[in-house]
Length: 248
Image 1 (cartoon, rainbow, N blue to C red):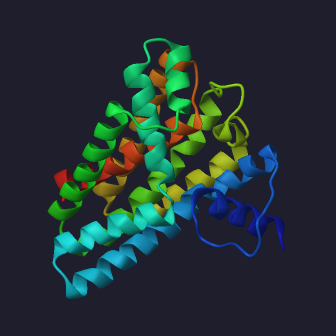
Image 2 (cartoon, rainbow, N blue to C red):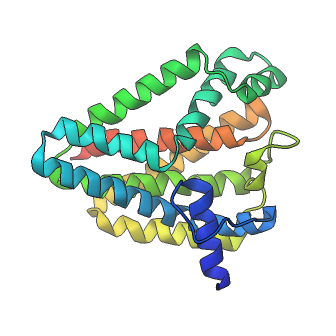
């Protein structure tokens, strides 16, 4: 197995439940380099979601196609990023101090803030996707899934990890500059799927979310956690769907 293929499969294994030839054991440094393929994994996930949407749309109403596409996205990723969103909102909503927020985020139980965040997230995705022109939805599904996974790269290069240990530490601060460049190049090439105004807006939205969320996490937590990365992933995705509605 070539080194590039191995790193790609590591990225697939880390972010999805898609089967890989065999379970790959990785060191922190190797996962950091594999992060270069995170946006490409987003293309694969988004492409699968787009296929589900298009096929279901052929035989069922738009609303059914959107619901099944969203369900498939959650299934193929095991709700990995949604779980991070819920934990982040629970921690930041219920924890008045840094240590308390991190303690709540580590708790596997979901609270009021996390529940509300998931409800509004799903409602937002459903509402915005059903409001889009169905002829363009497949493009936005692919682009949004890739862009949302790209946000992991600059956040991890910019901010320290807020915990002593944790799953997110496998990625945070281990992402190399070449990995950031490779992942960013994949993201930029993917923007060719969109008209130039939509492409520029997508780049601006993803960058803006990274910048604002990074400032907030730095102030509240002193850095990021794996949950924070999942939260930014989901926030970026849903904001891009909203932006698509506004520009469509």
